[in-house]
Length: 234
Length: 385
Image (tube, rainbow over all chains, first blue to last red; front, side, top):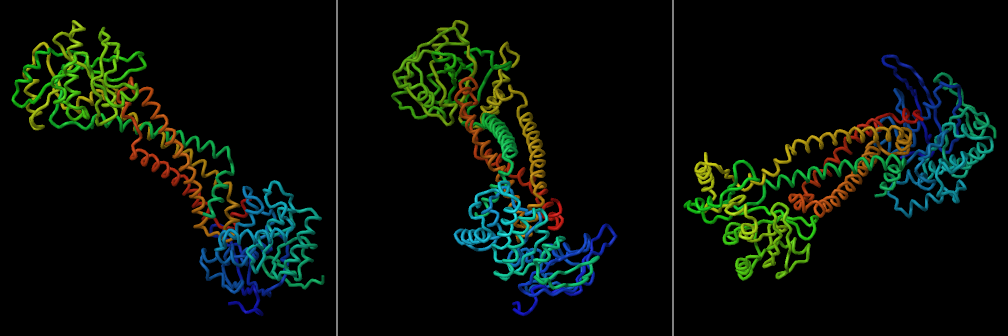
């Protein structure tokens, strides 16, 4: 059980290397980071600095090669693949740069996907999906397929899908990278709201200083090493 | 059940591709089902239920040659023999050449002893009436139902081999063991002999009933030895061997059918493997997203397998449905000219075999790309965009 004052993400000496045949390519080295529950952190740094790798490790879709990684009260190194999948379903919501909606499912069905893994009844799932749709102001587009939605609307559906299971942690990889300025602003506002009103912990990879300024903290990575953490004055 | 919708939607992702592969599966299963059923029907001819103590004596040179009727006297003199019936294929049709069915001129005095197992359901009075009336005939139940014949009706038969057109009176309607037996008409042999001068004192074959089945090999050998080196030599053979003669006329059909079945199976497997591989590969990112959301590799694998198996089950079921329809049409349209097709049907074992083959193809074609897709790391899958 997680202590409420304990960090939701606790990282110690985290390392990650990729291997090309016998060649080891270190991406993250000896990284220490604590993120409290309800934090909104922007991961920044140049390309190849390891920010997406760090995000993937924290989200439990990749495995570190060394160090301690505790997220939402679980030591991810100790979970097998099936346990990790179940853990992701309960604790993490994903927001991708390219939205990554399933094209053959409409907005409602896309949002419902994570709930199919829960024991919720059909009526309960419907209720939760409609709550999420209302939150992202897309109730009127519930029957629309991704190809019938604008980029901004697709990303809002993706956000609804990320939050429908009420995860503690939202991870976003360049969530505004494919959007125009107006839609990007809307998405950032929505993320701020999720953080402030709903207490979601958000970890966001971004190159965009404007997006990074929406976060409360900015974590700068440089060549796989934590360079600095800066508090943002909003 | 809540995942069925997801499976169905994924299957319908590319409707044209799904339709085309469904058609390919449908036609393949249809073809295999029809061919295997044909083989089973032909096999059933040689494995026809027979009375163990009956055999046939015919001309050694072939079925189109005749035996002297006097040979029957020798056969009847043998101590093992219970009864002998001479019989000739008449080959007539009813009203129109399309209405073709099996019809024989047969020794009316002994036929009910020799064929006691295949002429059933007749009362003693009906048998007596048939034997009394030289222009009488008995017809099988299926045939009577087909043309609406009743006892007392007159049936004009037009000869195709022999130049006579007998008008026969139905004296009884019998039941047989198989559809082909009930699609048959028998009339008095004398009518053929009297109407066709060159058939006087001749017959196509003798059907001999013995006291026990053990008598047959010895007796058959004795008969053939007796007539050996005579102008008309005989060939005595068991009933099934006699039926097999007709199957052999079609050549080595069994090898051809098995060959075609294997070729179709290989072709459909290659096509399905290619299609499923492509269908799964283009969803690499989607699969990674599902797994990121919490779908385990096993669950994704099951969903992909369900998709492949649903596709082949649909294709297989439609193929078998079409085969059933075609079998019915073949029975009705060609059954009158190709007698063995009257027994043509899809056996349950053939249906199970063909559905099984379809499912194995579905399994093989899906498991490899599905395993490859689900073993790929999520990060790698997300990068595949």
